[in-house]
Length: 125
Length: 178
Image 1 (cartoon, rainbow over the protein chains, first blue to last red):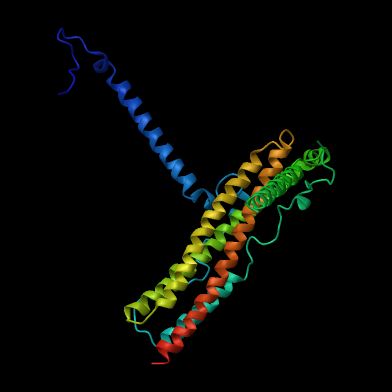
Image 2 (image 1 turned 90 degrees about the horizontal axis):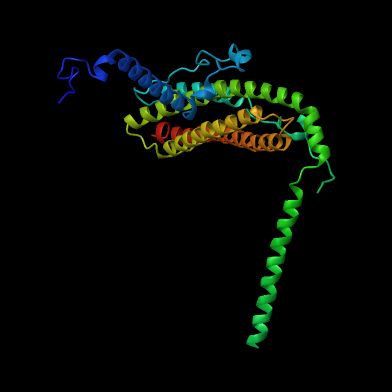
């Protein structure tokens, strides 16, 4: 049963008098909750790591590959014969070479020596 | 005789405990940072952070570009060929295993990169002039995590080769052999 917006003597109740304010407050609360959920998903799903529009990444945004790097979808229907297998082999070997051409995350750029923050030989107590 | 055995056992136990304590002491002594190193971190702090910030951006670009290629290898090629061979009633158990290995490594690559990126970001937020030790530790941890990402990449490249090898076996036994 709904709460009456008018009291028995004809005066508006508190919620009756502040309906509009309540609507705005509820809307803001729902919006904040949805933004909170979205930001949590953005941060935890790994999407943040792929977002090159974040501050600090502006310099490299233009270098991101926006196309599909020449990858063709191999048809997943049709017969398997010498011709279709050879077609796949050609595609696969070409893209495998592309994938392996860069030894990503190699090297040791965070080495303390490289950053000139390496340890000294004499410890202090 | 039994008393001697007990004495020897106690001696061995005591020696083991002493050895553990000594190793712990040695390990603990290697941890403290020298005043000279702390001063060095403070001195080179700004340039180190600039280098790390550049690495942070270039690694993000690498993650996006290489990630796309690694994703496409499985979604546009491997999975599609497996589906096609399977729908033609071929035995693709070898190919399925190869793709499972690849996909699980790809999942690990995504997760490990996320952990590494979060650690590197947190290192960048540390004020290294005020907290040089915390900064050093954060960078060291990020370094370890970055090497794990590289291990994942090496494994992915290996599984790409493995799939090719299994594919050749499949072709010779199932397609041209029939």
